[in-house]
View 1 (tube, rainbow, N blue to C red):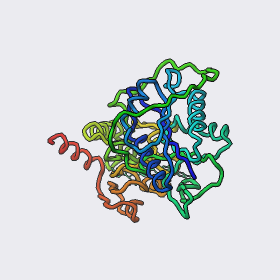
View 2: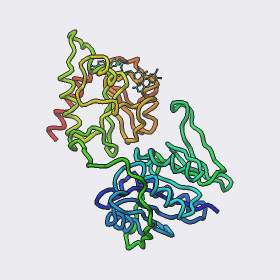
View 3: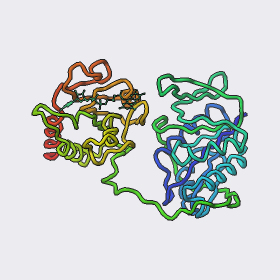
View 4: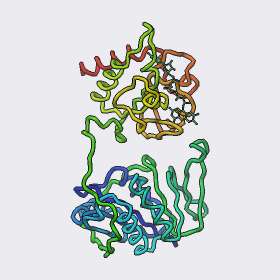
Length: 343
Ligand SMILES: Cc1cc2nc3c(=O)[nH]c(=O)nc-3n(C[C@H](O)[C@H](O)[C@H](O)COP(=O)(O)OP(=O)(O)OC[C@H]3O[C@@H](n4cnc5c(N)ncnc54)[C@H](O)[C@@H]3O)c2cc1C
């Protein structure tokens, strides 16, 4: 009989991110489908962990385990790995699910090694065949999808975002079982966290729309000149009014390294595609981007796809977009911004 453990770090203030809640509903569903027990394991500051456990008290978990303390609340490999290891051992978990955050992705492989288990990352689906749990993930630079199972236990799963709907249910009073985990040797001191101001943050995973800018924004236009500053203003205004998330093609983000004039708020973090990210917004709008296969492969979870391109034979026209507007993106987006301002 499997024993499922759901693991996550708790946000300061006691919140669980929507990503964390998605994986919780996946863990709950797996436990129900397998007819086995679910335990919840939380890591963070003491008051935060209690608040988080209370907020998901109705998730059907048989136990709420916790590793608490100021040193465990911050992101550090040594403490994260010690906390996860203790939780997995205490729960005697055979399958451990965690949201594939950068923090969990850094600590969990080491935990799998310590537990003599196995780990799979970037899980995009789960299934049960003949009573055996299976995971789905993509291989070969996201060209092939596989469904696989393992006999080794514990089996650790780092799940991608957007795979499950976020858990919703009754809050209540959860009884926390706090584990006493000795602090490992601390070679890293966390002095604080610096985040960009919300309006400077262009990657917004919860946004309804992904707006993708391609290299065309920086290319010579019909008048024979480039208009990069204007492109920057148009894109910035659109993002500000709509709250859309900003994606980019590889060609555009690579230009910084090639010494060309670039969109100043764009970095490699914005790149979508085979060697970039695979966002999961419900809608996507590509502008001045050709729609080459290595780029479009990152769009596979975007349900409603539109593109603006001057070229009627561009990649988007080859069945890769639901709607292609053959038009000048400068003109289109200027007009869209005007209409948005009018409300
Ligand atoms: C192994 C490998 C991995 C790769 N991984 C990625 C990846 O992860 N992500 C990625 O994006 N690429 C990736 N690429 C690169 C990819 O193949 C393309 O080269 C790249 O996506 C092209 O970027 P682009 O469409 O922005 O630029 P371009 O190909 O230069 O296209 C610019 C487009 O802008 C249009 N345009 C110009 N001006 C206007 C205007 N005023 N209005 C409307 N349209 C206009 C043009 O018609 C053109 O279609 C990868 C390539 C390889 C070989």
